[in-house]
Amino acid sequence: MKYIIFDIGNVLADFQWKQYLNSLFSDEKTREVLTKAYWDYELWREMDRGAMPQSTIKRELLRIAAAEGYEKEMQLSYERIGECIWQFSYAKDWIRELKAAGYKVYYLSNYSRYLIAENPRALDFTELMDGGIYSCDVQLLKPDLAIYDMLCRRYELDPKECLFLDDKLINVIAARECGLHSLVFTNYEEMKPAVDAYLKEH
Image (cartoon, rainbow, N blue to C red; front, top):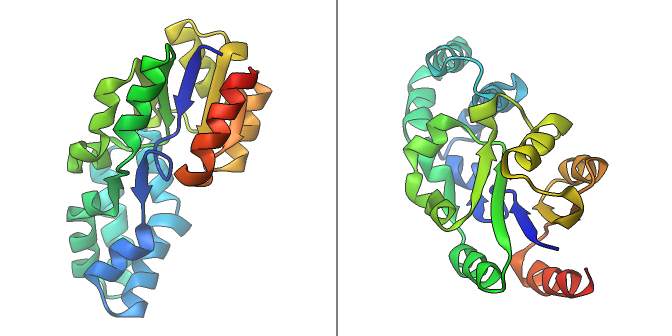
């Protein structure tokens, strides 16, 4: 094994949507309306995909919320969106340890350009990595097999020499279909020794 590929959300950075909304709004109905607008209409996925102009996405979010009487609340949630994610304390040390052991380290993540811009410090561990792909930059989303292939081709990685970590089983299955060794990430306390053992065996 030569290459370690990380997903970001819930692997190297904590993504806590419910906790974020709870910090802004005490009213349950407000949180339900906003969550539905972002997720049930798949506008969050469109942000991650990066094909639709961000201005269009924002306008649609505000339109959906306004229909329920929550336009002001939507505006606030949108403006402070960077607060929904923060870096895990172990992220940089784990990357440094892997690199010190001789592995090259990459990221492959569904992520929006807007969220990156709103909280760049949460992702500054990428500066330690050897490269990677954000979905928004290539207009592809995991588990589309094309995005895994693109990463391997861009950095000339042999899939058989890659270990991919992601918190979503569907993304792990897709990676395996592309020939990458892959593990479902649960939490650092469990996965750190599991990854160490896997690398020793492979």
